[in-house]
Image (cartoon, rainbow, N blue to C red; front, side, top):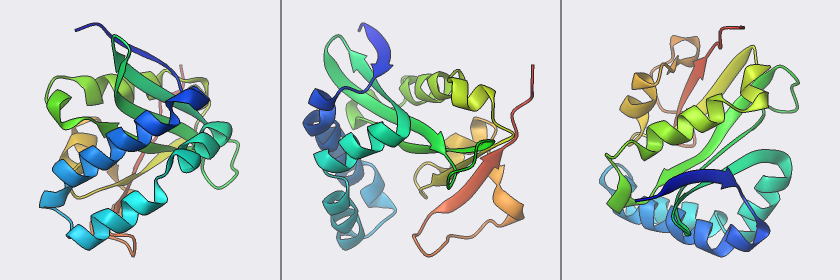
Length: 160
């Protein structure tokens, strides 16, 4: 394996959408209904990811030239001091090998993170434990799912 991260390119959009769809259908299906997964996939199109890349620092993780994971960091509702992590996915065949941790480390090395007073992440049921291991805690101590069937987690970066 030759794993590296780089910024998303417009030509990555189709492959990214496929990675996300496969991950949702394979990994997240244990925690969500088929209808929920398919509705989610319908919104996460190549055009969605291309647009997301214009609003965030959007990264892909590659094994040689194959995209195996994604993650983005962007402003939290237009804030200059609060940011969110988005679209963190790892292909099922690569899960459990430190790729997710590598994505978080990449996002936490980004200039947005370094200037943030707070980072929020909408976490799936599937990924909750992983994000907690990475130091994210329930926002406002609310440990229940929101209307989108996600947990809201946050972290307060230490300024260096």
